[in-house]
Length: 229
Image 1: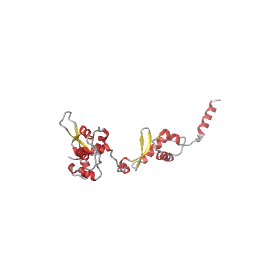
Image 2 (image 1 turned 120 degrees about the horizontal axis):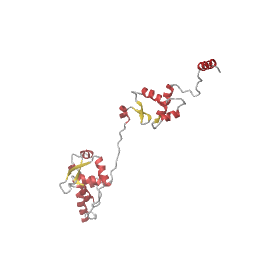
Image 3 (image 1 turned 180 degrees about the vertical axis):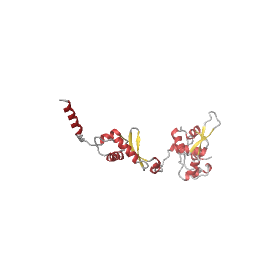
Image 4 (image 1 turned 90 degrees about the horizontal axis):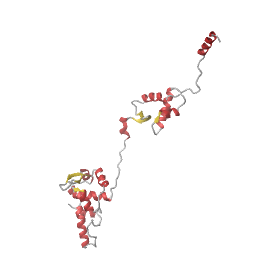
């Protein structure tokens, strides 16, 4: 083959239009729609690699994300990056619209009720004094629950060896029960009449006897230590 033939072949190749790909990528606008659909339907952030696996051959999800993110700027939802993945999320300044307040009813345990009663009627009272009155140890969880509810708080330290911390009821506790101060707490007879006080002796008290018996008197005295100032 001489030099003239070589040049003629080169011209033929240059003039030949390129063959269309069998897997032509869709327009960028369509790719944006595809990325948008996947992000909207996914419960988890989606990586670019995941998008490439889902979209037609030749697509450029990274570029589509750039355009899509720009298109969502200033809208109620945004295209955001989460680590190495992407997701559609509510605009940060509108997050308050998604909040829902609910009232959770939490039933106090027997230990918490007894501990709260001792603190209310004997404040300021230390943990050791609470345990002495109840006759059993007070778990940390019980005290933590009452502190979390803001019904009790730490009081002054007692001027005794070790200077133990004391507990007192809070204003929230008084407000909840419609009391002006702790002195307005009901007495022993009122608690019994309301069915809030069980007829059982406190630790160390004598067992209940018949009505009018000495046993009941001794038990009442034991209970009054808990519920009377």
